[in-house]
Length: 81
Image (tube, rainbow, N blue to C red; front, side):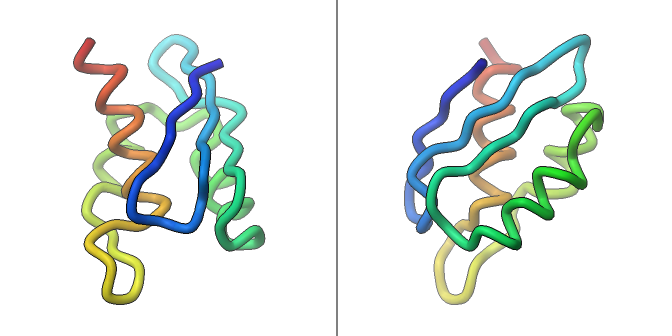
């Protein structure tokens, strides 16, 4: 299980697993519960490169980032290790 502390968004924590290049068990603490449950469900078993491609750069209101964008940053950080 990987834990990521997002910045600039309402959620306080993102946890997820990576298995064979796919994302699993995404969970957010805080933030907009329904929307984040939807995102978690939509990306389940998706290739991490596809998740990054789809979510990177999404903004929330006037913020420069969003919870989906923060998830892409979390995955990228692990991918680039």
